Length: 205
Image (cartoon, rainbow, N blue to C red):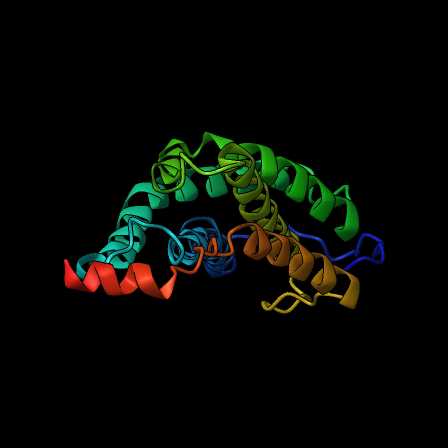
């Protein structure tokens, strides 16, 4: 995907089933990468949080996933549709590389307009670099969604293209590094080990 591909002569505006599959694939991928996967990173961060106690160990992660899916999915759907039709205007003129770059840039910016996503701060607001973590989460999720939507726009306009994206090694490495950085930023905070005497006293109390 990193190598520019010349415009194919059989480029045609998609209609019917091909248009529906392209839009559906773009929206579905955006829901997964823009709502569900970020909620899993928040759950990862909660593993070292005092919010996760014995009585909330199952309820809180489930609450995060459900609330993120319900709250962020409408925004992910609307923003992915806006991005799809925005990129569609340039699909016949741009190479695949330029279209993907534009999708990544626009997706990263548009992700900040999914307002329910800001509620993730509730779970780690008092921690250091809380805002920086949230910004990174928006950028990673938005750019990944933008890359995914751009491919579906490209393939929809080119009947000779297959449905599944043909990512190059370079593109895969970028995606892995982006989500790897997000996972590193959301690693659970290590709690200091409690001295044995303190633990014994706590049990006695």
